[in-house]
Length: 165
Image (cartoon, rainbow, N blue to C red; front, side, top):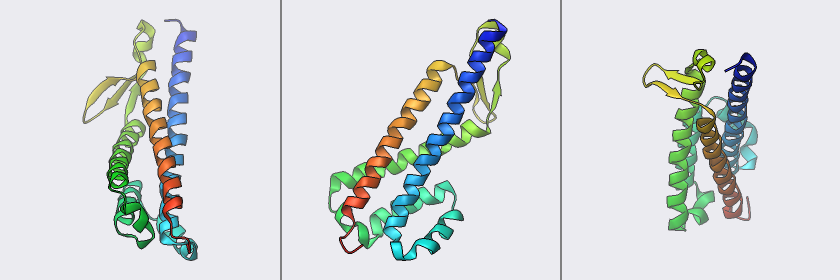
């Protein structure tokens, strides 16, 4: 692989990571928006401070807790199919959170680009794995689907809020 080709592969990988981070942040913002709605507009400032002190894991856990317990979501809980879909969404959010941590805290080897091999992601716990263009596309496609699903959930939270909220 020429140096120019190596630069293109490296740039594509870095672009993928950048896109991933931006979309993940957007997903986290949707989680926060759901929580803010359930916690009530009258508690906005306090709720924003509360969110600022929470990890992503705590936010996702709070999302599931509020879905199950918050009186403002009584209508949402009344549909068993929505409860199971929401639970699946929460599980996927946790899986993505772990994947994000692995993506951002791994080491990457670009050394093998010279011989036509893909970028390698090295995780101390799991070893090395190919993160070439196919793996990058899969990563962004799965994240995109999660973004669509949390967006749908956010709209559903708005729809299910009692009229007086």
